[in-house]
Image (cartoon, rainbow over all chains, first blue to last red; front, side, top):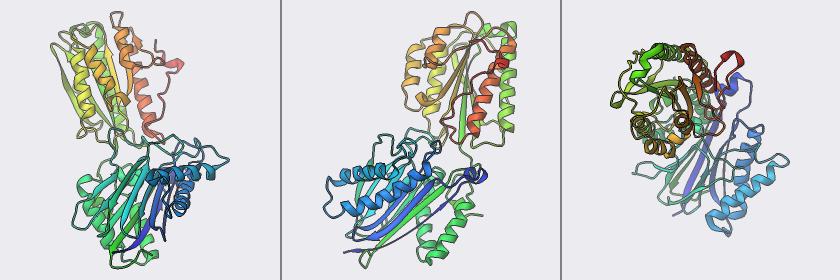
Amino acid sequence: MALHALYFGVSVQGPWHLSRHLPNEDAWLGARGRFGAIAAVSDGMGSRPQSRRGARAACKAVLKAVRQWHHDEPGGDIGLVELVSRVWHEDIAPCTAHDCAATCLIALMRPAGELIAAGVGDGMIIVKLPGEPVQWLVGPRAAGFGDETDSLGMDPSWRIRRLDCSGGATVVLATDGIADDLLPERIDGFVDWLVEDYAGMAPRSRWRALGRELRAWPTPQHLDDKTLVVIHARTGGPVR
Amino acid sequence: MSTFREFTSPTARPLPVILLADVSGSMSADGKIDALNAAVAEMLQTFATEDDTRAQIHVAAIIFGGDQAVLHHALAPAAEAPWQPMRAAGKTPMGAAFGLAREMLEDRQQIPSRAYRPTLILVSDGQPTDEWESPLKALLASERASKAARFAMGIGADADKAMLSAFLADPNARVFEAHEAREIRKFFQWVTMSVTTRSRSANPNSAPPIPPTPDTDIQY
């Protein structure tokens, strides 16, 4: 049975960039089409001069790549992430990959309910199927420490997972400014809250409300930009 | 008040600083242990009063003297636990200290993944008296411990400079040599400045250590 999917997302500048009058270096994207529903988040590496450009280019590259790839899926999942990297390298020119380094997290919900999740760098992709606990598809951090990350432009290792979500699912992508402060034992409640409180809201009201919540981030001494995107897919209609 | 409060950590990201301190009998001579205690207390006081930081600096001290290494100061925010002076006696079981340090660094309950890259500080005035090479190798090889920033100070002419260099495991890093009590203080002032600079930077994991300035007057 085909799914009906909606997506929503928000990104806010963190206190570090606000206080220095610097722009948000996170980016996000959501889209629907014949490919299904796609969500992407990207976090530009703070030490690089074109990190904002790199993050935005990463999200756009995901959409461009998915549009090309979804018809015949050349090279399978690896072919998709390689295409994302290639498009990103082309689009950031004449800037260098080093200057534009950014993370890239992708969730593609196909019309029949197959989820493809892929990521390079920190942050998180989690999925909650009906009646089941949250699964981590990307993250949490393993042996590393806060602010250590891989990125596009660093010859990265992509993590790729496929999951059957034909019964419906909620997928949440977030940059590390959110992911690193979430309590693992509260993650199920976090996903439920996002769906219950926000999925039914009108888009503009939802964007404002979530933005307010992120700007009031409660963890002491938090400084990072914060971005999250949700794909909420349920049975009962086609993905449009 | 954001609803995110229900789902997020109530504490700032920690930046752990772990001191491995030689408290063998020789440290009781020439005011060395007193100077070390004073320098560490001053470092903790500075960390406790830092407010323009991305991280909350946590400090632990593992001491090695007598026949064993023990946790002298449990890992805690610098502002929350007053420094208890160390006492010097006995041998130099440095290998045991390396083992305790590795266990602490690998313990995700004590040092969660959201923590910034830790700092390890080794201070000694002599030769290890236990098996230290294997424990040091294990410390440097462990995935988390190997990422720690490391500082080392040899106190006096009998310090094992080769062993301290092996601990640093970086051809560009130098063992700092202290021959007087005031130089112990200078070393910790430099470590303090390096850690606080990291904690204020855009990325505390990648900020390079601050090199000592001419007026720091540290020999290395």
